[in-house]
Length: 193
Ligand code: AMP
Image 1 (cartoon, rainbow, N blue to C red):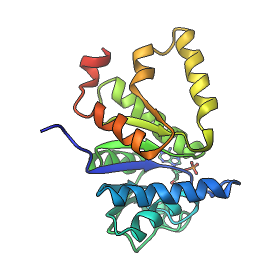
Image 2: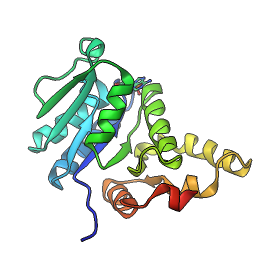
Image 3: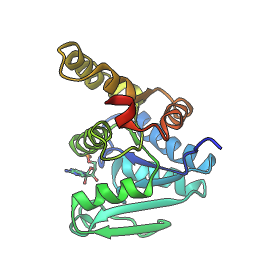
Image 4: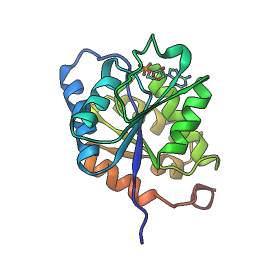
């Protein structure tokens, strides 16, 4: 049987940003995951886009697992109404647990924290520390400038083309899930080494 995605770890902003359309689109991603029977793993917060994605999934009756460092509970309004809230001690534990709980990573619009998280798991994948596929859901074209910059780094010979092509870039949830599913079970070492 071909592998399927049971849970997706979503990275996204802890702030709402200035475009209410992105909040709605993020809420719809949460609903969309739940509607497809896919569990959501996220940072456990109740602010900004993190709130939207979790609320969308909860409203649609989905499974929502949050992972939050103890010291961030107050600052990020850690939610106590999730299917499960895992409280950890460090940011590193948070990322490692999110990786353990999910089958794939999906990056929605976000800031420094989001950026740091997605780049780290992507780099883990290509050095063989983690084989969960990684994707950008490019809502509103938010990630286009970053993707262009990464393309420039590939042109300059600092990122291998196959590493760049290994990351999913999609405009809608169906395309994102299709791309991630197609990469499940691909051993990054074998593919990218
Ligand atoms: P931001 O994109 O900056 O709004 O942050 C999104 C999420 O990333 C928030 O839950 C932050 O706590 C989290 N975050 C920030 N820095 C890090 C980090 N170094 N490692 C893991 N998560 C982080």
